[in-house]
Each structure stands twice: as C-alpha cells, then as structure tokens.
Length: 384
Image (cartoon, rainbow, N blue to C red):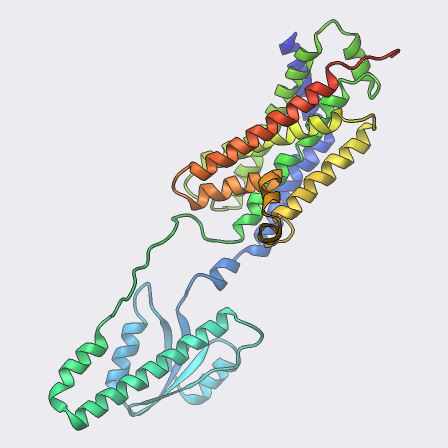
C-alpha cells in the first residue's frame, strides 16, 4: 500500500501547474535575469585589469620608455600604454577610452586625468593609480638627480635601493573559493526554490484532512493507516522537490555558468536537504487550523518570500543588516540557513560550518514534521 500511495502522490505532484511554474520555470527565469543584470559587475569593479593610458613625449627619454615597457608587459601589467600626440590623447581621454595622460618632458612627468564622478568607482581607482605612479616616478628622479649632483659615487647603491621590491607583508588568501559577492543572490535563489516546496508539503496535510478536501475525506475512510499515507506522501513530495532542486542548480551551474566552486556535489546535497525543510514546513503550516488550501498556500508562500527577503534575495546587504541588529534571526531563518550552507561550501576549506548548517536544517525539518504529524494524526470528524 505504501508504494501504491507513493506512486499516485508522485503523479499528482508532477501534474500540478504550480509545481511547473514556481519550482521549475520561475527559478530558471529569475536566474537568467540575475545573470543578465550581474554579468561583468565583479570583473569590472573588483578584479584588477591594466589601466589604459596615453603617453605624450617631448623628446626622447629611454629610461622612461624602459620603465613603461616593464610596467606594460605580462599578465600582471599595471598599464596598457599607447604613445601618441597631445591632441589625440585628449580626444581619447574625453571619449573615456583611457583613464589618464602622462606628459614626459625630459626627466619631469606630469599627469592629466578627468575628475571622477560620484563616489569611489573603478575609474577613480585607476586615476589614483596613475597619480601615485607619477608621484613615485618624479620622487625617484629627484633622488637620483640629487645623488648625481652631491654624491655620484653612491649612485649605484641608490638605484639598487630604489629598484628593490620591498614586501612588508605576505598575501595569503583567506579562501580559494569564488569571491564574487553577487553569488549570494544565486544562493538565495536556491533557498527560495527549497522553501517554495512548502506548497507540496501543504498539500500533504490538506489531503489528509477530511474537512478540507474530498481526497482527505476518502483517505479518512480508507483502511490504510494514516501514518503510512502521510509517510508515503512525504517521500513522494521530497522526491519531486529534490528533482526540482537538481534542475535549478544544474541550470545555474551548467547553462548560466555560475561558479559554485569545486564542491558542486555538496551544493546539490545542501539544496536537497533545504528542499526537505521546505516540504516539512509546508506540512506543518497545512496542519494548523481549518483555513482552506488557498489561504494556507498564500501564508506559506508569503512566509517563504519574507524569509528570502531577510536572507538577501531582494537586497544583497539585508542579511548583514539583520546580523547587525538581530543576529539570532539569521540562525532561525530557514532561507538564511540554506544560503549560509552554500556560502560555507564556497569560502571554507573544511566542512565544520557547513555541517552545522546542515544539522540546523535537519533539526528544523524534524520539528516541522513532528508538528504536522501531531496535528493531523488524531483528528476525528462527526461526518464526512
């Protein structure tokens, strides 16, 4: 009887239009919009690229040319240099094809950049780099000229000292994961898919209560034990929800090319457990009170979206704001717990924090499931 109920629960769920819309099509559409909106933001604002500049020379300066050649070569080049005349350089600057102009006259270097508009931006950072280079170059030239004039015997020591690459600290990356802060939106998108599975769990409770649905009335008259019916329904809903999670994660990872790091298989696991949490939450909501299926569905959907909002789906910094004023809320917000588990996979090499989030999700799942069982298993009706 268990397999019979499981079969028809599975068929009922995959035929539901709401399932196709909210758990399959909606995350695909929203994920595509995210990709269009966020594409290139991280590379343009965070990842460093060579600064495009123009150089206008008054005479021949072989030393400066050698310096610029060194700074413009290799994968970690500081500048993308173009030698031209003043008029062409100004046209390029006005057209924003370059970030600044270097004027070289003898040993002196002067700079022209356009004022940066607004607050800190990638362009203002490039202009700061150009200005810092100009100041450092002029300072080094002054030191060398002063040494030649006063202590020419020390010139080799001074040049060596100025050429030495002094490192006062060591660059040690905190993580080998993807540093793109836009990735949090995709984490929360997966959390939303998981929580919207509450609609599946809600139908389990509604279809088990004879006063809320015709199917529930027939099940209450059936000789099959309610525990068997509910467990088979739960297994069927969790299976369908897991398939939806797999579709969503696969679309993000392989179609939209979202970089979830090297632990993609664990992303599937975290999403699937989050889906179990969503189904159990819907089961608990559906078991409370005598409201109709539409009213309970609206409550479950609204609660899921509110949780996703505070987790950062609609505003990326919302989770940080909540963490500042009510850090405890992020620990009990199902959407925040699910997205945090994915964050831990990306940023931490060990599984300690990830395991904590998984355990939290499993505890929530058990609590919601017990609530649902407790509220549905002993109901009796005077008539059906």
